[in-house]
Length: 401
Image (cartoon, rainbow, N blue to C red; front, side, top):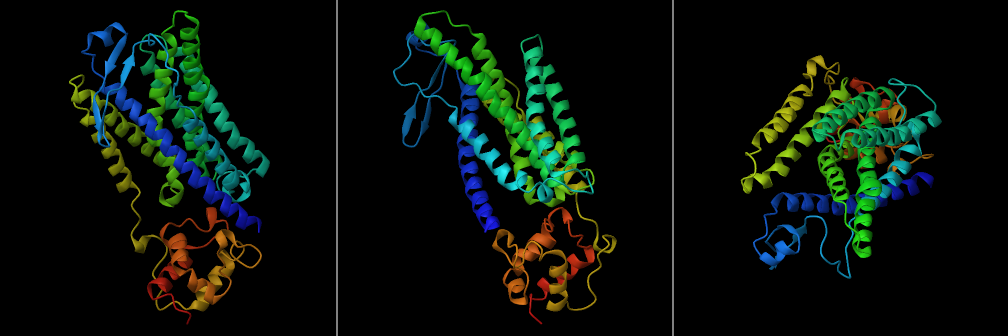
C-alpha cells in the first residue's frame, strides 16, 4: 500500500510541478521578450511620465500596449500584480517530488554502489548539500563581481565553471539518473532563490519608497534584472536535466558528466539565440544565428557520440532461436520480481506470473530493452544477453509458450 500511495503522490506532484513550471517559465520568457522588444515611447506624455519603452501587440482578438518605466511610475495603481508564486510553487512542488521520488528511497534512486557506496543518510545529506552549496557559491559570485566592470561576463564564466564542476562531482557520487536530476534541481533552486532573496525584496523596497515619497534607488531594478537574465539562461539546461531521467542512454554513459554539460551548453546557446532574436528584429544587434548553430552542432555531436555500438560488438548477440515464456519468466524472477511481485508492486505492476508478464509485455520491453531504465541502476545485475532474450521474445509476439 505504501508503494501504491507513493506512486499517486509522485503522479499528482509531477502533474502540479509541470503546471506551475509552465506558468513560471511562460511568464519568464514573456518578460524577456518584452524587455528585448521595447522601443522608445512616441507619446510625449509617456516620456514625461518616465516611460523608457513601450510595445504594441495583438493577441486573442485584442490589442495590448504595455509600457516600462525607467525607475518608477509617477503613481502606483491600486492593484499591482506580483510575479512570485509561479516560482515558489514550482520549487515547492519540485522539492516535494524529489522527496517522494528520491529521498524517500535513497538506496534505490540515489545510490549506485558501482559509482560510490555510502549510507542512505549520507547520500540524502549530500544531495541536499548540492542545493545549498551551489546557491551560496553562485550568490557569492554575483555579489562579488556582478556590479563591477565587465561583471556580467565574469559572473557568466565563473558560473559556467561552477556548473561543470558540480556536474562532474554529482556523477562521481550518485547514480547517473539521480546525478542529472540533482544538477537540474540545484540550478532550479538557485533560480527560485534569485526570486525569493533578490528580485522580490528589491521590488518591495521600490514600492515602499514610492509609497513613502522617497527617491527610488535604481540599483534594485538592476540587480533584479541581472538575476532574471540568469534565470532565463538556466531554464533550458534545467528542463533537460528534469527530462533526462526518461533516457538512460544519456545518464548511463561512461562519461555522463560530459553528456550533461554538453546538453546544458547546447540549451543555453539556443536560449541565447531566442533572446537576441528580438533585438535583431529591431536592428539592435546582428542576427544571432551563430548561437543557434553552436547549439545544434553540440546536439549533433552528442547524437553521433552516443550512438549505440553495432550488435555484434555490444556483447549481446541475438538469441539463436525463439525465446520461450519460461526463459523470460526466469529472467523476471531473478531480476524484476523483488520490486514487481506479490510483496512489492512498484508502479502497480506485477511480473510474477506468465499472465502478468504478458499483460505488461510492452512496458517490460520499453523499460528493460529500449530505455534500459530497469532494473533501477541495474541493481539486480541483468545481463546484455538477458535483455536480448526479452527483446527477441517481444518481437516474436510476446506469447506464453
